[in-house]
Length: 211
Length: 211
Image (cartoon, rainbow over all chains, first blue to last red; front, side):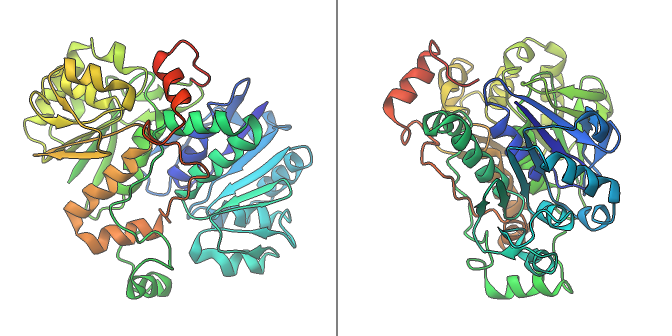
């Protein structure tokens, strides 16, 4: 089984590595990082470079594709070659998946039309404009499409997919070995839980205190 | 402020990227991946290469150092140059931190002697043998030393450190933007929660069902 994780300029690193760290433990599986050109790909902060081992041309029939999100999705959405590749691989995948605004790229390629899906909480409108039906769930399974919410949700998505592919006991072993027993020091991880004024400020974009 | 994240052969990728994704959002901060030699460093699965932008010689006075874990710690523990570097940078850091078996490297360099610390749940004995006092907590702060439990716990460690450095509201904004509202599909992320037979099998190492 081949798992292809897409990289592109200004992707968010945890979007890619969260599911990778879960999925790479599946038996009899090859995981490959892929980008338009093989070689290092720079993340959204400019301080991290992850190597794409293969170009899009070299990976045509992965069983699973994972599309991370990031600020780079806006520009990547206009990349016709990449949308072509997504449609091509999707024709034969068992699972087509995304994290964060990666679902915007899937929707832009026409793959989520009429499907329940999710994205980063700031991206619901964009996802809807591209024909999907956004939900507020953290991991959304609709047919062979699994989309996850913002950034860190890719870990939950990856572990969900490990369970589907290798069974509950195997997935629990992966969870135990990665000690995935999260204990965030705050409870502000969703717009329903964070202080309302913080949500409003981030929504307005006019007073971004973090990037 | 400079944050140095150490890479070495056979590190675990999420150990490094979890804290990175939280810490890289701090204002006025440079984050740099560092290794013995600059260039791509291969992870424990052999399918991921992350670029170290600087060699150890080029990063001598980081404010924060982050040491990820991974199967490579066993060999790295015998690397005297790396232990020297850890002692050198620790002399001037504000925070010296680790994820998973990264604390084994800190302890091996003599930095955790007599200190409360943690590591991957399978590594308590090794950590104790190297002079630290292991605890079962997920994130342990003892003076300027912050050690985190297995793999995924680096996210909690990173967010804890963001809060110490930039305040609770900033940390909550980071949590919200990374949508860190974990919802694992299983509740087996610690040896106290996972099925007892699974814990026993992984502890024995004789019937490893995942690597």
